[in-house]
Length: 88
Image (cartoon, rainbow, N blue to C red; front, top):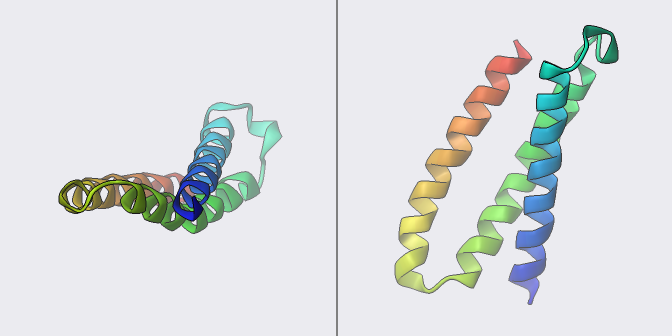
């Protein structure tokens, strides 16, 4: 039960962070002139990503969790790389 709550909260936070960053990048320039939405969106994504990973890994059987942890780590690193390139 705790793993499911961690997974749901982590997923919601990660989606919120990605949504903030994408809305700031694709929205009008006057909506975020200093880039604070991108900064806080990246912080939300970084802080909620481990909760999503822990929740997913705890809910799956051990043979699938090893494979999922590798795939999820690559996906998280790619997203963080893209987020940091958006911050510059």
